[in-house]
Length: 302
Image (tube, one colour):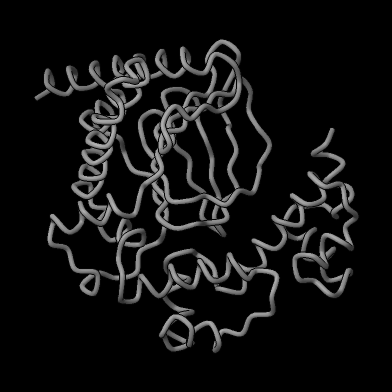
């Protein structure tokens, strides 16, 4: 048993080194590269500031470095011994906490196509209504078969003539292994049509499209075919926040982006994302980002 554990540990370390080498070769400088539509390779040589980002459904494996993510009151960290999985669009604060020029942060992020996830779940004959609402993100220990599949996927970048045929097969294997790891209820957020989970994902999509509009829970519940209390309960179970908190987070993140990219003033940015009261916007912005709009944006630009 001890020999087997030692052999597995050694194999995991070797696979992580091979994955790090492959990512570093394809991303020689800090930044991100997407060799395939659903594969994103990233590199950074220094720790980063906390940044609020809207995480789409994704599976993330690190070959080097460490990352910290926060959703509401939940704080999760992961490195090369674990993986990150998100199954709904969540406003997450993330930052790289371990990286250097000698050993940069190197990661692989895989988008999870709903059609592929749905086909894998269907083959396992899973039924959404038998599962409880599950939070839309998790950090889980990484095992050798899953790491090996990710390594094989990244290595396909070296043989682009084979990638169109083989890459979808390896991605299907990865999704299957996530199901085996116990993530079927979480993956159902991506693929299921009908039932409570679908109601929550439909609500998320509606809020993302209409985040700058006034929202009443009763109206949103009617749109998705749920009771107001049921929507509130299951929305919080999946996202870690209420629908109104989710909307507010999207509004503030978009206002921050507008001020940074379009260089507009805070009052205009607040109005464009749905705030009619500038003082309320400044108050909630400071609570979200730790500084009033002008000071926060000036710091980010510097």
